Length: 241
Image: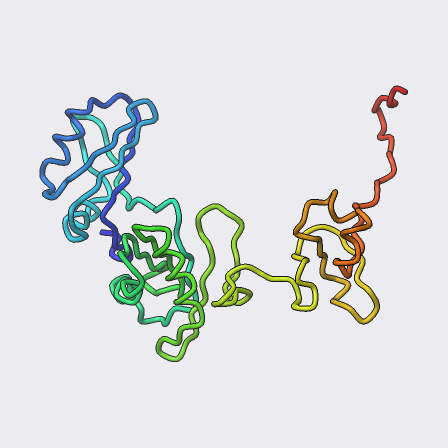
């Protein structure tokens, strides 16, 4: 069994043709199946169970057989999840699940192990996006057994380091002296103004920024990125016109 994972959903994969009835027959020995989604063309399926323990009975078997077809069984990873690090070494999936449950309905808890020892990080999934967001903010900076937890996105989007996220303002804001600006494109910082290494732009559309009426309200002058000179590469054709 993948004892380092708690989940109610399992991924099942195979190669070659497999009838839906044969798959269901192979899963009939495991109680609590409430939903089975099958893609026969791509040779995989998702099985959802009513409890974590019933799904765990299936996950105890890394492989099953359906006639002559070998089935691979793994926990299903959620589409959107939280990567959590700096876990205490003694924290297992059950302890992580109990910690995560205070923020909502946790559906997935995984702690990574190597050679039987925790690597100090894991993943969490929730039933609702709002619950995941609450856990992302609430777990960041939490002290557990003398260690400070840190969270990141783990859902395929650009990851956001929780150490750079304010609990009151989840997204990075422009300096208070520049209320109409936000991080983004190019801007000229005045002397003694904001950090020149930080790139700002006005939240208003660009065409409004460059007008004479809008400029007085914006401490930074808007400018586009400078055009790069055209470099002819060896073997390339000249531009016409």
